View (spheres, rainbow, N blue to C red):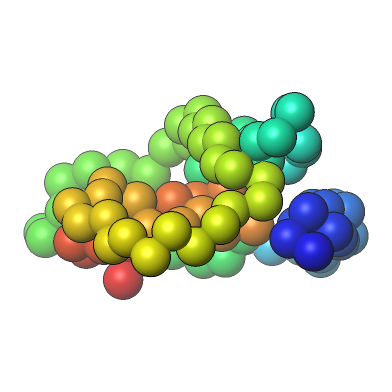
Length: 102
């Protein structure tokens, strides 16, 4: 079920992104054996704040991100703590709690 959902999202993403969004995004979502791999340029498809600014001296720039996860995960009943990322968007941006990415 997850494979079909994610592949449907990946196929639909190409149409969705062409709607004149703020950033050019590049995302590739594919099955590689028993893994689902997402490679992207980590660009959001929406406007972002102005950077640098007084609270953040950094500028936005694309960066290649590649994440592979189990294509058919199973609930083990275990809780994993202190993870660096808790998910990934269909545009290939990692959700990183605790890094001001809210």
